[in-house]
Image 1: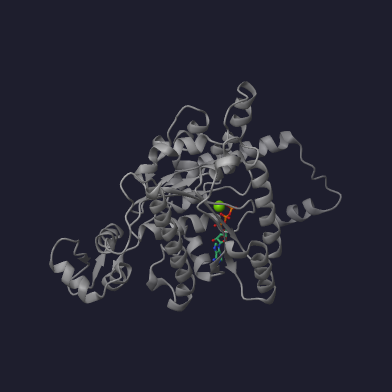
Image 2: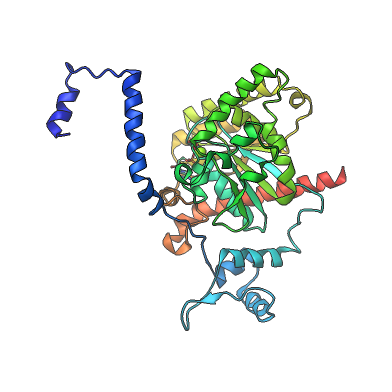
Length: 400
Ligand SMILES: Nc1ncnc2c1ncn2[C@@H]1O[C@H](COP(=O)(O)OP(=O)(O)OP(=O)(O)O)[C@@H](O)[C@H]1O
Ligand SMILES: [Mg+2]
């Protein structure tokens, strides 16, 4: 369309009204274009690669010094890394690094006791864009770097977590490999939908837009079976796989949908990311009100459900006066539930997101170290906190 035509279309006299038939035609046209470029989309889709680690960064992840790392390497029980070319420093793959972390952390980090199950953490907030997905994937990656085995469940039909895990939701994920068959009652365990990712010890149940059909299936089933426990589908489906993992992290959509209700009911704990901004604070208050109203009407949930913890995590925190004022409101409103860890607004995160990545994907050499440290350090602390809660829950489970 020529520039003149564009201008003409904006003139007040030109009728721009749109009928539903027009929208149907528009969607057909868009789908045709998508079909035409689908092959091209599959080709250049950025396959994600896990980061590699230098001896120094590996030693730091293991909590040992470089000399000890060298000494342990000579014993030959752990991977020695590879050097790309003569005289070049050694590099360790993520898988090798995780092997090292697991071998060296045995004494200081409690392993999952025999018979214990994974704890399920839901990252939730009805507000969009508050960093639910970024937090979900960064925490999942961070927990693997402590030696944990993690399952990420993408409950959001937008499929953003699926993308961060290296898959193109629309072109690579058939609907029968999402949670949909579980919600249709065709499957009893989520096992069929679990797939490994580019990141060692991080598995995924992916999502695509088709997953939103779950929202229609539930009311339809309720019509024929009034006793249908629509809130317990995911909880029941996850149970058979919990023994295989240390942690399950559920990324949720920005709505109180059937999927979100299921995520919150199957969760052992809830983390609510919330930027300290007026609107985000206001909608966070709605979250607790709406969810508690719904949960209190669910048989079996209202009387017996206890969360390991429910925390508010301040994210995208800016150092402006207004932001500080809202941080105070958040603290007043939620008291000790607000974590003493907050994630700053960060250009490093913006850059990482453009590459469908998180701070744990970014090679340290790519960023100025102080800007990187400012966002990496609070994530590391958050991951340590989640891990400590995990251990606490296992020990409690063991006592019972
Ligand atoms: N610390 C940060 N600083 C700056 N931008 C950030 C930070 N964390 C996340 N973002 C950006 O904010 C945007 C929203 O993040 P994200 O997709 O994780 O939110 P969300 O709550 O999952 O959104 P939705 O409700 O759509 O699912 C993304 O572009 C992300 O890269
Ligand atoms: Mg999201």
